[in-house]
Length: 114
Length: 118
Image (cartoon, rainbow over all chains, first blue to last red; front, top):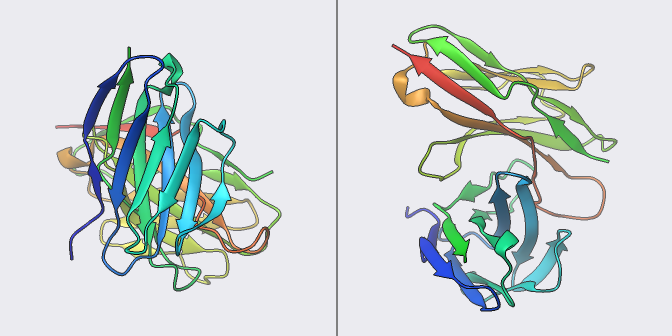
């Protein structure tokens, strides 16, 4: 079974631009979660989508948004980029069949904002 | 509020020796899960082991075992027979099941950087 894939792997943007990151979950997984990882703040939960609905949201400004498609693929968008948005963005998918379901992560998208 | 604490920023271990990475957690939810992930320098988070709050026995997965002490709220990862390829950042994470409805949200600790020396 193919793992979680994320595209692109690397991105360089300038302040004020917007960016869209993509995540394809493991086949059959309906839950997709996004995390931001920075040296200063560590790993922080952004949001989770399940069956095209946002199920949970972390404490991030409205510039961070996401969506999930009917095939469970998910995108996250960051508008009006700031220098502090430079981070590794990780996507994780889960089967959500029970309490023991594990989240499996993709390789991440490394975003650099100049 | 839920919280994960990893007090060891970095650790060294000799190849073939065992090492214990510490993790304590705080939650008021009686139903929760604890996870350990490995993150090599490439960035990908690799799932290692899971322990549920109601599991009676400590979880084991190959060379990984989880020393779960519920009363102390600790979930330490034990790696036996360390290998050079074990050098990486290790994260402890928690997922709560009872409050706030269904969610896969994970709360992570700050991680422990493990260096395996030959």
